[in-house]
Amino acid sequence: MANNLTSKIQYKNYEKGEFSDEQDRSLEETLELIKSFPWDAQRGVDVQASGPGIVINGPADDYLKVSVYFNEKYTVYYLDRSGHLYEFHTSDLDIADQKVADFFHDQLSLSDFEKHFFNAGYRSHFVNKTFWYKVNKFREISRMLSLIPFLLIWVSMLMVFSINWPVWSLLFFSLLTFLLLPLFLYSAFSIFKVYRWSKNMSLWLVQGSDVIIFDNGVGSQSYLKSDICKVNMYGPPVVSRGTVLTTIMEVIFTDSNTIKFPGMVLDPVLFITKIGKQVNINYLEQKTMFRKSIRQL
Image 1 (tube, rainbow, N blue to C red):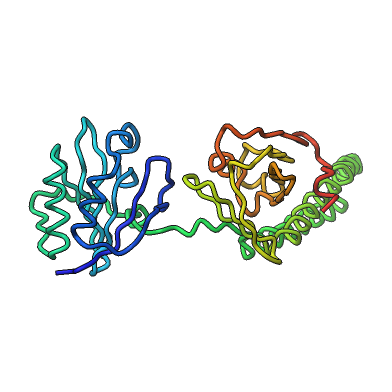
Image 2: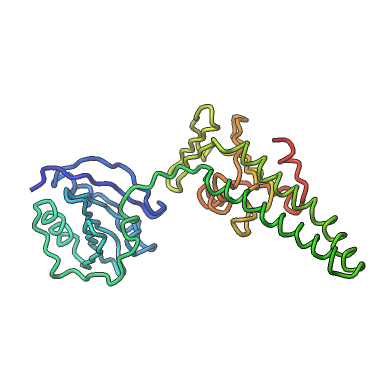
């Protein structure tokens, strides 16, 4: 029997892996936490393992979660240390409490639980995620180095064409090179400049908390989402990940403090989701190739 187990709360506006009020609690304290949880107010959203509820971490690196289900019912999830997920449904919270008591006493029976056939990735619904975002240096350096083979292939094709192709084909290919090469080089330069500027930045941001922590590589400082005055977004926000690396987000707070970071740190679409739709966002330099925001870095 465990005297105390670690428990934590997940609300419906939290992200997967986001929890609060995590601490060791006795069985009685845990049952009181379950009783005081606003079940009715938290219904109407996800009824899967990432839904709102109370998560308890067992001594065998296993987890029990009491969560919401359809029709005012409850789900009790059990995740064993091997990642196998089981679930049990009930309309009586007292029955769910008994499952919690059995879990504390190491007497939980899975005979009336339904086992999930697929078990990949369920652990991420129960464990804490750090929510620190930073530049993936290996990925970005690899991305920049991958541009070199394309340039070499292009030059090699130009050399082959100059020997075996008619003059008009060579002129056409040379003109195409003259037009596209500056764009290619500028794109590579932009990626490198943004990388060099942001490689040591880190940002802590979750959907369910008002706090923002930003580290520019020299020191970190805390801010509040509720203090955001507006956001200036330089570059395209809602396109594929590969084209928003150099999109720059400038967050301006009511006290005139600002923080700036690129899509290399946090994808713009995810950033917008996390700060909330009520924030005023100015979309700038949406279709500008040679962006002033990058030149000024």
